Amino acid sequence: RRTFVQQNLGQVLDSARRPLDGARWWMTGDSPWQLLAACMEVADALASGDPASFKSRLAVHQDGSCNGLQHYSALGRDARGAEAVNMVQLERPADAYSAVREVVE
Image (cartoon, rainbow, N blue to C red; front, top):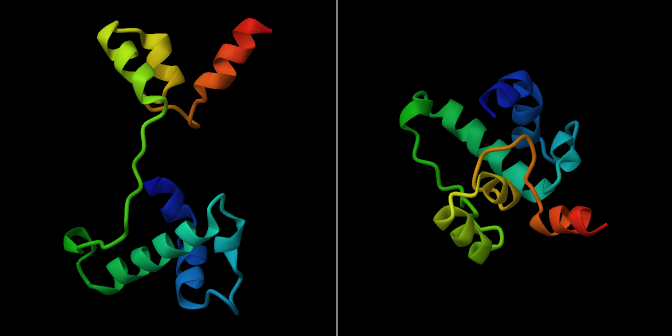
């Protein structure tokens, strides 16, 4: 994520400073309003002069994926199950229901 922001810092700052009359890069994200909020937070952190100690007020949404299956995977030390319910970091979030569908089909 850090590399992504570094590679796109120009668009991040443009989105924060000129959300409506700039390039509107933030509108290309999966969740545009969350991306815009993050762009503004990054811009504020950099403008603070000390980004490392900047206190973010950006809400962080956390939700489990199939919480019951997460518990079963953890209790059973099931690595495949843990991947299916996002207990390990993957390139993209997994979907347990799609994994089950693939097995059934």
